[in-house]
Length: 565
Image (cartoon, rainbow, N blue to C red; front, top):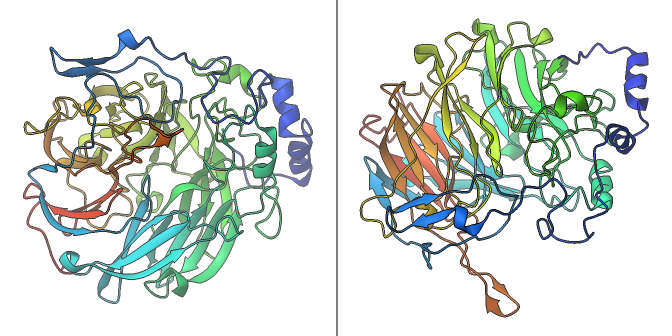
């Protein structure tokens, strides 16, 4: 499906007027934006709405002391907070475990304790690393990674109306002879709407919020963000400009895909009809968009593709999905297309992780007419995020991509989130080949299953291969893994992947007190949520909720402790 930028004025007006409003469209289609049977003003999850998964029978999951293994539930509702069971550690493990990895340095800086992004670029013979969340960033000079220096930081007053610091990508544009940055801006996923089914006033507040729902392009004129020169602001909404208008849709989701050439790919919901998603705190089912940014000061929209069933009016298709109506699942994109080879260099396919809609192969050879060529309905795993990350760093040599979601609950109160190896050697007929092994604790650990260690257990991401410097290993794939730290998979034999190494740092958290009583220890908000790999220096940066670890591994090669040659 495509939404072309060449919509006529009549078409724009028709699209804007259909149903009068998203609420009217929802009522027409049967979507329930405001469930009257749920008490208003209650925090998420204190009351299960019709259609939500039931809490599982406690006897159906948990730790088996005889085998030392933990059986995770088959399905759960979205359940924020701790869920310890018999066998869970009553404390937070302060040990660090490592195999085939060496800690070279540690820096006690945290940009986002539960999540953060990273990006690096070289400037005048030095390398800089940004570690950031939407309201805060730190920038480091990491030319000498053993002696990284904090050279800039900023706190954003998002509530006061200041624009957030969005996910970004920096590349050198050879044609322009300049460093160009693309930065995304998205409506909040949390904190504004905490249950769209019971709080219509929160839904309205987010829809009425004045902010850029799209991306900015900059000329990078120095290592600090304050040095950058703004070139353009582009709304993803085809009906409203970026200037002083309330825009529709989600804005630009996660790190944009840009190689310093002609094309830009981003994820997002262009307008409010992209609304068929179950997730309580989010209003949009994102699609995939392509832009021509040959002139960074005037980006041109080319086409939009979305998963069938994403939009209001597509409910017949949406109801075919077994997740429809569960008020739990994230449906649609969380990240842009994963593209192993740029279109400008002959690349033909992009791979899409579309949440509960599954895995898609998209023909991007003509970015003005993106086309779906294959789809896999992935195994259902509710709650948690089911389709988020795809590692495409090895597809050119092995034909395999690695697809995963990530956990959202603590203490393994949800199905395990597998990393799926998908064979795309025939891109028109992709097949799930295998799953990567589930990490096991170090023999010295005081637990036999990571579900006992507290916090969340499961994969997050392998980093952002498109913005990590150097050429990725065709054998090894490091992965952030929450309470299991960083796990590195050996993919020498794609049919029999194994874990070759790991770095699992100590746990930091809190003990919430409710009504004067200690309720439960929590590893809030989980130890390792992100990694960044410098392939050209054989270094792995691990970002935790208590600081940044810089690691080396002989498996990757001798570390380079200065600028790469």
